[in-house]
Length: 169
Ligand SMILES: CC(C)(COP(=O)(O)OP(=O)(O)OC[C@H]1O[C@@H](n2cnc3c(N)ncnc32)[C@H](O)[C@@H]1OP(=O)(O)O)[C@@H](O)C(=O)NCCC(=O)NCCS
Image (cartoon, rainbow, N blue to C red; front, side):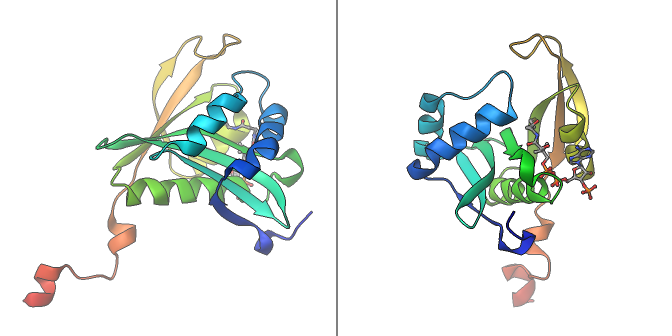
């Protein structure tokens, strides 16, 4: 397994499709994205399909949806290959999605997670997400979803930078 330092996160391209489908197949038992859906998201001008890779291996992926002018960005999916879990890759993908959402002007991130998905719930909790709604029978197999959200304040991007108005004073 590649070392942590060699993992990089980048935008996905069409050549990643076979590995994305394999990851989707192994990571999710239901509600999987089809090849057609992946192609749609790869082409979509506002959605961000990100992958974590090391030494040519695709180790994880995340799909962020950004609607024009919307204050909320939506994390639609995140998955890490089983053999690469527990090494901070999920956290890195999520942080990168938050950065991209902020850069696009979103003020908060929202997402849904299965109420029985302890690993994902732990990741989101650790990253500061709070539950705000419950959706019964949300998934294909009837499982409930918990909706989580997190504010994305702008300060991280602007810390240390004075505004133009402050500089003129
Ligand atoms: C959820 C998932 C993406 C986490 O990815 P990961 O790379 O293993 O997570 P990380 O190593 O970045 O973990 C970050 C934090 O999340 C929490 N966490 C992650 N996996 C955990 C687990 N199995 N049990 C408890 N906490 C866990 C921990 O707090 C961890 O921080 P720590 O290492 O400092 O303790 C991964 O388990 C996965 O792909 N699951 C299958 C697909 C899935 O369910 N996706 C979510 C759909 S909403």
